[in-house]
Image 1 (cartoon, helix red, strand yellow):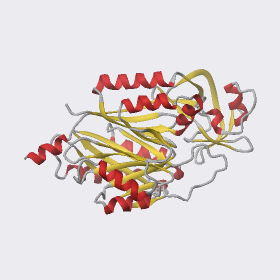
Image 2: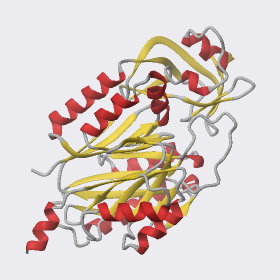
Image 3: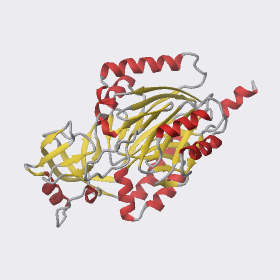
Length: 389
């Protein structure tokens, strides 16, 4: 009886290490997990770590149920880490996790989503713990697969009102050369893979709140995507003009930049269901074509976003969150790498990191974020778990 009570009260373990190698990182992570309770571990690892080696080292220490994503910046109690591992461990008793590997994310469709969700729901219902009445989905996907729109839409439609959050794994947001990393970006139970995704359906005791937040505000000027290739996320023309030149002119830039990072303060924004979502670019090509982080279709009407006060907006988000849930035990966050770049450009990283640490945020800098049925970017997409009362 005492063990059951302790399991229901066990805290979420916040994990963080800057160990120089995978075995050292695994040892430090293992020591931070409250108990070897057979719970579930989610990790965010910066590019210098080899995911397969980390997974094997953790398995040797008794931690087999581990999923992870690769990133350029991990976020945790030490703020933003350029080299390190952060994450969280969900204890049994308070959480039950049914997870699945999607080996070829690019080929995943609606029939696959239907079968997968049915299977995961069935696993959660078998031997269900009493009181685990709240449900959410978490999706980690290799950004190189370029499939997030279809993947999250399919899963979201099958899950209905169950909130989904997630991030696209990868180590280089602004990528002028188009170079492709050979490293695996997704880890599932000791297997490191490319082109894959992991989906977790998680039941828990406490209420949760999913939010897609941005510090950008839509402008009045409308632009039309006049020539685009949605499959490649490529835009060739805006308002019938060369995309790069038209975009630079709309931003009021005196010279035409040749790097995507120059446009990070001014994403394009689209309206979905009464809300605006940002669309930022990842790469500029010599011919003036632009590769975006999300699919853009011909005929799409967009507006130019402009930044508001990033820290003030983030503080307002946390105040609203606390009014709904109380102070969260943890906030699982997917922070667009373009926002991270903007913080660094504006000298805001320390101030933003202080806000995140004050509200128990853990997560990573992503190459795209998943929110319910939508693939977004240039956002701070997160899910807060209420603290036990």
